[in-house]
Structures are given as structure tokens and as C-alpha cells.
Length: 256
Ligand SMILES: [Zn+2]
Image (tube, rainbow, N blue to C red; front, side):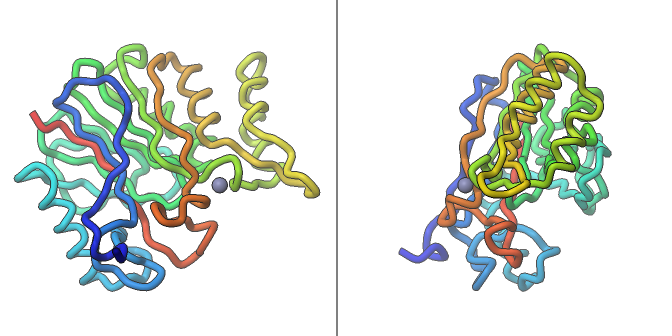
């Protein structure tokens, strides 16, 4: 079966939070985008046909809770966190959170790490877009600081991102992570970089960097990680694999 003929399929968290919380990352399956964007591209900013993207977004909405509204973000690898009480046009931020029902906070990725947050009580949710720049700048710490639930009462799930098998970075990236860290934190962050054979570069573990920084801020429950968007070409878009490509949507909402 062609990817376009498949129904959309999602990656969902393996976390234990109340059923009121719905979280997922879309895959390439389903949708009507063509070529490099085949087929379930949810991003309007990547030169895909906007008619196809709009249809894909409608298909996504139709398969989720009725009367769900969506808050999309204009992502800039920064650290701004948007509180959302009513969904509106895309706003410049790299994370969003809400305590309102049927309001989906959404980020778009193709290699960067989507990080999901849910209060243990199931009454607050957030999602953050964390590439290495945002991670190093503190997007996860900022999200935790704004989130209504304390870190030790918040569950986190790491959605699909580029794996340490393919995320090659220069020494300056490692330096940026280590610059402000000391002691055990610095050791744990350093362990997320291994020398890439035959180069002066490093292979970086985005999942490990996120986990380490979240643990350091008191988050106890962290699941997910382990996918590689570059390796798993049937399931995921990957910007490193193919610069012209679509984006998966990662979204989280309270259904009740
Ligand atoms: Zn890989």
C-alpha cells in the first residue's frame, strides 16, 4: 500500500498519566502531500502545497476529539513559552502549555526533539520543540518553570528525534552544553557526546541531553526516546536526510 493510501498512524507515549491526557506524534503515513513531502506533512512553512497541508491538518482534526482546537507555533529555536487559554493564529514560541480542555498545543519537527509534559493529576499539558540550540538555551527549564505542575509531579515523554547514530555536531555544540555546567551535571552531559570516528566531530544524543537536564531540574518520570528520524525513513521526515522535507506534528491536549 502506498503511504498516501494508509490511514494516519501515530507514535504515542508509554507513560502513566490519567486518561484525560492525549499525546501523539504523527508519522509520514496518510495524508495527501506529494514528492519530498509525502505524505502526511503538517507544516505550512516548507514549500509544500498549502492546499495539501490544509487537507492534512483537517484529516488530523477529524480523527481526534470533536471540537478540538489547535495552537501552532512559529518556532525559532528560542526559549519563549506560550501559555494558551484560547487557540489562535501561530505565535512565536518554542513551547506552549494549557490547562484548558480540548485545546491542542502543537509543535512541528523533523529531527528536533518534541518533549511532552503532563501533570500527574492530568490537569495541565505542554509540548516543547527542542533542537540542540533550544536545549542548550534552556527551553526545557523554561517550560518547567512556567508549567503549573511541579517537576516531581510532572511526567515527561520524549517523542521521535534524530538518534545518536546520525546526529553529528561540531565541537562547539559540545562546548556550549558544557560551558555552564559543573560537577556531576557536566559529567553526565559530556557522556551524551561520543567522538565520531575519523572526524573532528561528535555524535550527540539529544535524548540523553534532554533527560539529563530534566533530571537535574527534578523531573523523575521520563519515558520515550530510542527512535531515529534519519534511520526510520518510512515513518519519519528527517531534515538531515533530505533538506527539502515535511514535518511531523507533535500535539498534546486534555480531552476531559
Ligand atoms: Zn540514525
